[in-house]
Image 1 (cartoon, one colour):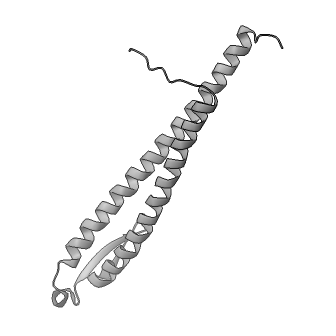
Image 2 (spheres, helix red, strand yellow; image 1 turned 120 degrees about the horizontal axis):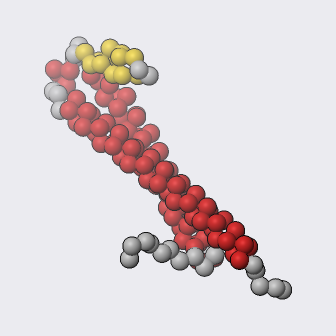
Image 3 (tube, helix red, strand yellow; image 1 turned 90 degrees about the vertical axis):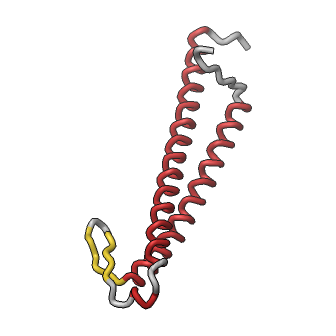
Amino acid sequence: MSEPTQEEKEQKSQQLQQQYNRFQENIAELETQVSNLASQIQEHIIVDNTLSSIDPDKRQGRKCFKMIGGVLIDKSVDEVIKILNEELKTLTADKEKVEKELQKNRSGLQDWLKNNHVKIIKGNQ
């Protein structure tokens, strides 16, 4: 088998760079999703703690507004607490799922680097 030409080497290098860039883009997107979910979870916790700190006797008949699909809905405090708890469970499950996907992508990148004998060289060293 003959030695690859310079053009073939450059094509292989470009393909590897494109694959690496896709891995990096996927990882960055998943990290953003995890961050957004963590932020939403924190916001839900703050609102839940605030509403839950109200004495149950004082909650009776007290109005609370919840934004649902861009529409402000009039609910009771207890109804909103229940909704928040359900949403919090869903957000937490979603975050765990995205974190697993992120970990899978990171290990996939490491395997890809190893299998293709790729070494990352950062500029300006």
